[in-house]
Image (cartoon, helix red, strand yellow):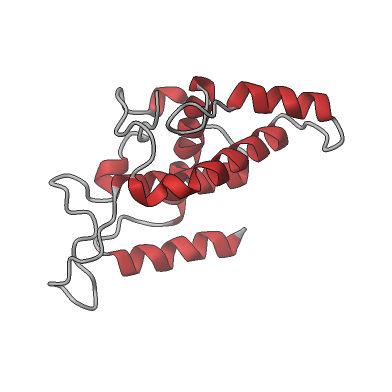
Length: 161
């Protein structure tokens, strides 16, 4: 198992027809900046992890959109795993000095032999964090048709925290 998009992410980011943010406000013909589906997942996931809030599993697409990380994100596997462990420790209200519970969570969530560096449960939890992050994203901004506007809106979400 790996990564599954929250329902309606494809529409929000304009992935129908694979044209997500293909147009920039500054240069309508410059399609050199490609916004990957994993970029959308990552943006949502970060918001969910920061809130340490899980979304409803039923609000995920039925199938994975990718197994493991795309090339551009492979170097971030350990960071993402660490962010997941941190979010789970906060969500479960595990005290920082409770080494046994922290270690149990790490063993439960991590699998260094998997493409995502996460266990099956870890992958599923990360997907659910992306759902709650997408909810936050939708509540704070409307759909954008270019990367410039999205990045400005996304920055505003983080500035509100």
